[in-house]
Length: 97
Length: 95
Image (cartoon, rainbow over all chains, first blue to last red; front, side, top):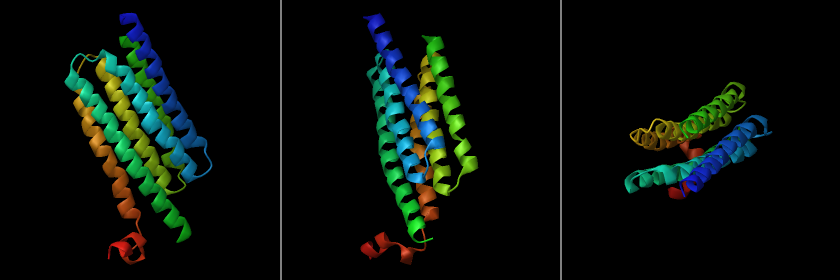
């Protein structure tokens, strides 16, 4: 059981790290602001989400586990709001320079 | 497992640091604030991984605070980047 949970942790955290790699690659390589925003939100939501999912089996108390989930939900909420706001500000700037 | 979490934290931080090149290159302010946002998220992930590697549960509280604060940078940018209020269609809707 311990080994299975450790394996799950390794797979999930590695997956999260991969999404941070993908997010950085997209942020550096994509051609315009909106596609880069798309790459960034993948790193935000999935990268951090998988890292937290991988850490969850290793925490000993329910409070700490809840704290980790709250961190992820906060990032989801702020990422969704911020990406909308950034895209809107950018689009307005392009249409009314 | 400690080494694994440490290595994962270093990897995430390295990726985020690489992403900061976007702040240098721009070209628009929106790209720069996006790199800063990636730094916030990556910082949270690295903090949580370091907290697991060092068996220090208090670091989760630091990550929670960072998650709260990271949202404000992007919102402050949008407020600063917004054109004058009378050119803002959303403000006209509210009026």
